[in-house]
Length: 85
Image (cartoon, rainbow, N blue to C red):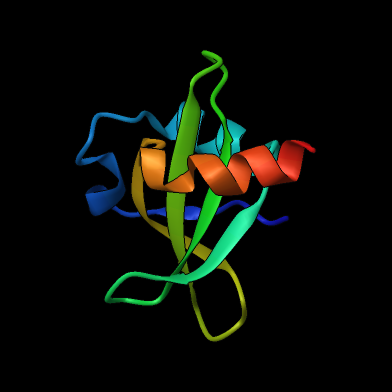
């Protein structure tokens, strides 16, 4: 995976670039086409062990553009539980 582009909106909830990159490098499931903007939501652990959701869009060449990151919300718990089975 090439280095993702992390835009300022991804930092709105206080998740560091290092935690975002760690979550992407160790991704669990992906929830495609989420929310109003149709982002793919990657779920993964940060280096701190917390679960994060990282919302990405793609440029014309398919590179990741991270536009959202925050501690994982309960709405993704079932998907994560299903993945771990």
